Image 1: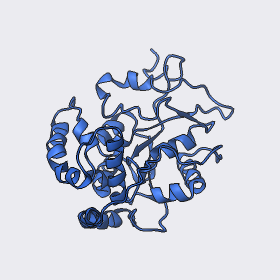
Image 2: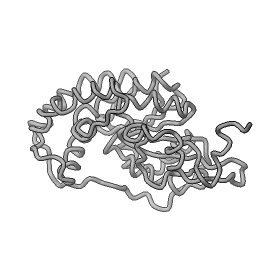
Image 3: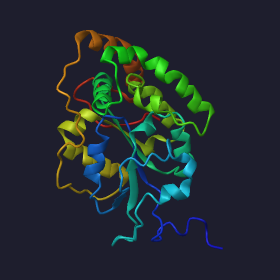
Image 4: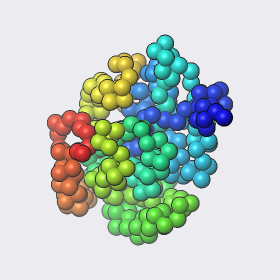
Length: 276
């Protein structure tokens, strides 16, 4: 009998991914995914955000495999590496274990943006899409009531899907150390690459090269390095809201600094592996 995985390269279904970009949301995941999608040794999902490990987990691995293009070996006798980017993966508490159980050897790239700016960009994305009726400070005040009970439900109910948890987690998505530790509990250091979003925005050529080395494919230059899916809202955060967020994130940034050696509210940082 053929092994259960022998049909991965068939025309009916693609390979499971060897590269996932789990987040963070509003941290440049769309830009990085679009930069990489033309690489001849990568096989990106036709839609960037597959959301299998969070929203569609009940559909099973055969469904997930069908979200990737069927591939054939290249001139180097290696099939292209399937990849996807779903920014909710980084934050959804059940995802790291689910990913490990299905693709334990996957490479993971995390993009971390200044959590204060990330929260404000997240809020304006919701406003633009008609999802957020509150002003920014009121939305921050309402966050715990909207999301904490939902996170508890996610942890105890494998089938629960929470739109409030996904949409209104303005501050909690910026608790990067907490999230990276969940992934570190499931994956070794050499499968995790953490990059400051500022570097992607200011020096995308160097970041693309870093990611390609990490994944283990040939160096290559995308045709365009224009930023994708930029959130341009043209509004400034109030000093009061900024002060609140900076005070909230201060202890969490120190925890992140102890974990990876830097935090994304600083300048001049470089890509780094998770500490073992």
